[in-house]
Image (cartoon, rainbow, N blue to C red; front, side, top):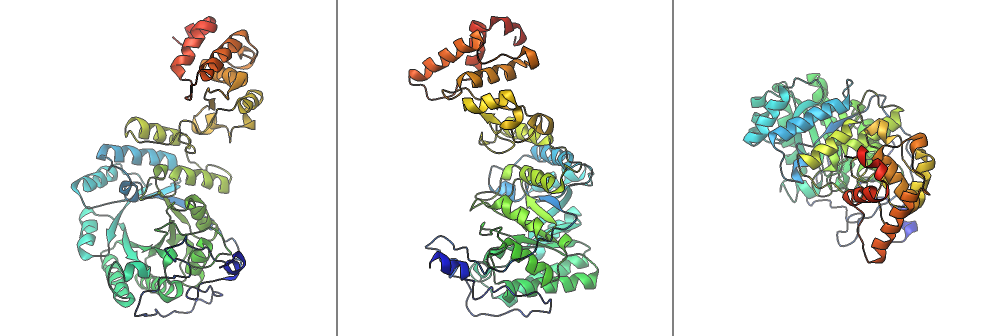
Length: 465
């Protein structure tokens, strides 16, 4: 299929239509609809476009929710109870008094899961609210009741890949099972949050919209705001409004709001990063009408991960024009905690939390930072994140890079700063060049730089001892 044909192509099943809001009947195919025109499996999935534009409809109130202790524990060794409580408490501080990080969901199955839930509930924080996650079974729902939770996520698999191939039932049976448990939750006074698993491979008008409409009917009857989480389980979503369903995040959100009648405050986006689109998709969900963006600390989540909460916080501040009460410096505390207490491997160039995210190896960049920090620093990282910009000494650092490293390490400011033509800086630069001429390939360590200070800048030794 040519690029032009792709641009004009839209799935025969998931044709986007002008919103009307009338009830939609569930379709009942005998065989699963696997959307092979978009997901051929033996080729890279196709992004198709129908060319239909949508307006941005960002809700006035948007927020972040957390899956660190649920999906986040499916990608790494489980956290200890102490680690969960510590991270939960730091998220409480990060989200600020307005509760920008509004909820946190937990597994409920093991004794450790239950202990962690109890320990976090004992904090009595308004935000993040502790919620559960269960499969759509009565046995799992009993766990929610036993722990006294007032809201729980319920896994309601949405695509035929899951309904036919995993659950081995048809759409009607799956829908009956899901709605039955939703009614059980409502009867018990628990707010259900239905997780539409694999929505980016689902039949939107043949299953998703009628399912969502039924949920809204139940919610109106019970006077309860039933929530729907749109789960991009395989990371197929794209943030393009002109793309076709089911992969277009803007059209998915728009369809749920205008065709199924789901209010923005009851819509939540949950994505995965299999195609490097995870945060862009979450922000697109915000922009086109979903209030909640679900993420995990440092992006830890099944396979390639979920939207990183720290990145979502930054995008929230960018969209709102302020941090809105969030304490963004807590991001650095969380980063340090992962490295020190959890012993997690954090890529050094990972945005906001990696050891080198605001450092440079290039001498020309360091030279710019010496003249004005704003030239090569994304924002005032010292003020916002309590992270000073830095540099790593390599054969590319040059005199400017070494001078910048020294001034940062020694805390020299204004007229006390060392220039790149200072005699000691020149001698250290010569030593660095010699290292790489001998075949060195690694960066110069802090310990080695301290030894150079002792040799060539002895007047500063007292400030580092």
